[in-house]
Length: 357
Image 1 (cartoon, rainbow, N blue to C red):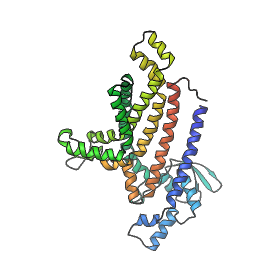
Image 2: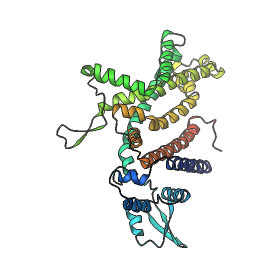
Image 3: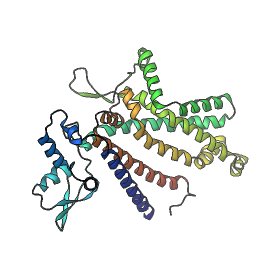
Image 4: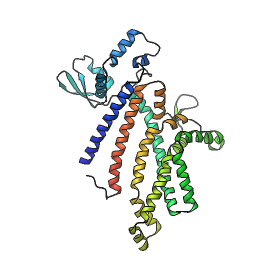
């Protein structure tokens, strides 16, 4: 329990650092947020009202403290605001706890603010629409990488120095060196255009698409095939090499030779002794790549037209919709932290030699 609390505390400080960096990095960007929100329909009076409403006219330090207050689950609000119920119910969804001097302490969900370009649409609504699609894509890709990497890595180990082993090493080297955006363009063109009559796959498309009548959305699973394979190529290549190198190292140990001398089969030695003792680096790679897939699917999603978090970030950057980018980065950082904590706990289950201190 103490170990978990330490990891949570470390994660909190990491998230605080990310939030601070994101705020100052995007706040000093050129451009007036109020003008972005009003677009062409602006005048001096409207700009003044909007800046006052969202605090754009405040000093930078005050804006930073208000931003942290919005993100914090425990936040402070002026007791003199007659419209506090509006903030409580409409924006924060918070529960008032107690009064402290001239403030009300509120327990609430983190408030990521609203979009500049979507008429004040909450960032949480945008993320709830796009993040599940990215999660489905990332899970599909990492499953391909895990099962394919274990299978081909064990195969390369069994057939060490055989042409099969050399072919798999060549494939993994190419998989690590080719950029994802190039693979996405190549797969989209080759399987979605040239071989479309055979594969029946689309060059672009998302998980949900409008039906032929344009009334309802339907699930199109075939649109998941190409982007998930493209996104899974690099982790697949890394897992192949990790499994092969670590398994060969473990199989050279004395206790493995003793297991063979006792008459155990290759299957029992490899899967019951060798693989379990060589799997930790693979778990590290899988955890890191899974979090990276959630964050690094930007180009793949954009090329394939997959309506996920990556495509949303690109479109937000194109339109200078800074709150969307800031909220997306914070959510990605939060997922990195959670995944790292879970992986540390998995280590102790797989390898008893690792103790939680």
